[in-house]
Image 1 (cartoon, one colour):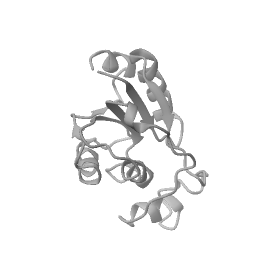
Image 2 (cartoon, rainbow, N blue to C red):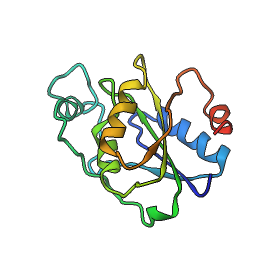
Image 3 (cartoon, rainbow, N blue to C red):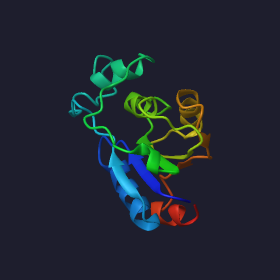
Image 4 (cartoon, rainbow, N blue to C red):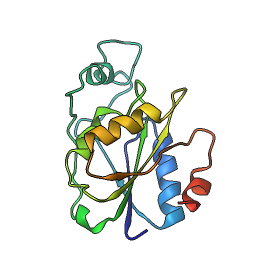
Length: 153
């Protein structure tokens, strides 16, 4: 791997902890995909059809704004993209991130956390939103030590 970035979105801190371990293990830069309007506990109530996260996930065109862009994305050859699984796929803010930069020819490796869903549908969705990247198989890290997984990259 050349210069590597670990970019992640984390709503509860679980994905953030995994991203931090991965970045530390492989010596990568770390970037949080932070929403311009932070999510509250009420926003994340997936049982409420009117909660912000439910409304976003029910609208495939939804693209929540990111608080701060990352300068000089061109310096990275490999980007690990981390997120929690929401409704079987990545949260819409991850789509915002993928559509905000030119990832043509870059190696993209997804990793996710989830209470019960797999990463397969998210992997397919990511490739649709960022088709010019070279996608490697992703990893659901629920029962995997992030540092141990990262060492195998």
